[in-house]
Image (cartoon, rainbow, N blue to C red; front, top):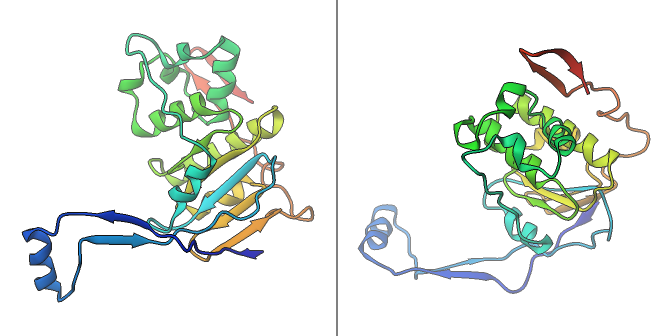
Length: 224
């Protein structure tokens, strides 16, 4: 474990000190000069190559600021006239990546993106994003916790079985860290960096967990 350091240079944002702010100052007996200052964590010494890294912490703790140092998040675009399955380089890639994010309902594969549920949209976007060097902000924030764990296990299995590396994600949910089995973890609440977070003596969650059930009216249950 390594303790993180705070930057000496703050991030500054300024707003007009208008009547709304003045009213709140009076109501809550506080003072505000129109400028907010935030001292972000400094990025620790990260390995040059890894599979998955996680930045975890509460809202406002500096996760996204650290995440931006790894790159810019890709936001997929979707053609409303095509199924979500039709947005990949090949049918095999589509099927494999859908399973890799836990989006295993075949009927949903045939729908356009805009009719999906929020949880399905999250997983469809994730399937399009998977690749070396990608960053993922607010990971699993819009899906229920069981779906989040399933998506985390599926993603980790896919990344570790393929030639994919240097994926960094930020999340406020600590319950998925075990299921992702990352190579390192930055905790922006405690200000700690853990490298080799999962020791070799620890039983792998992924090894003993079966997920990835593909289902639909046109086939029997298949476990991938």
